[in-house]
Length: 237
Image (cartoon, helix red, strand yellow):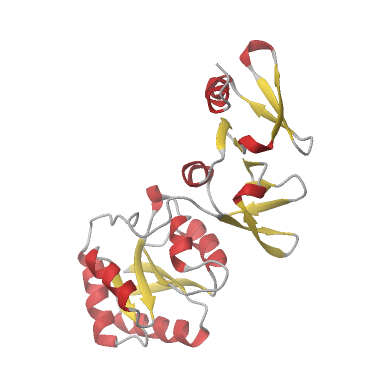
């Protein structure tokens, strides 16, 4: 039995797909989400075998959400979409599983059987974004979409990855690894990434350590391991 999460902003479509999956007796839907931000949280928490992912969703699309997942722990993905000639062509050319809405039960059954037999890791990089334009966050009972250029630094903590703009803090479901790979943020410490444009001053300390003062006056650590790399990125030899 495969564990799955269904992510779709249309309640009727979501409920219908869950019912159809239940009827296959091969997939157990353990959670559902009505948007990509909620979906990210559930994927990171429950680590499903499969996600059934709607393409067109408000704020963060399905493809954008896929770009935000850690490739090391990527579940299998079945895309769902209303008929779109170009989207379907892209899925077929890259051997991705997809379902057209409304979902045909026979087509779903074939997809599920293929998923059960498949052991190969699929490479979704051909359709995902190489660079993220914004980071979805949750803070003060709000969902925030923070533009990359507005971020001063990010760091990992007990509650997740904290995104700091100098004006506000918010928690993101994205990992530091994803932020490092898909944004201009630079590693300055095992637990910190910094926006080079947000650096006001670097204070050199004893033992090869340093601290960064950001434009908003906040201090973040620089470890010996990353100080040389930070200097290189700033053009300091």
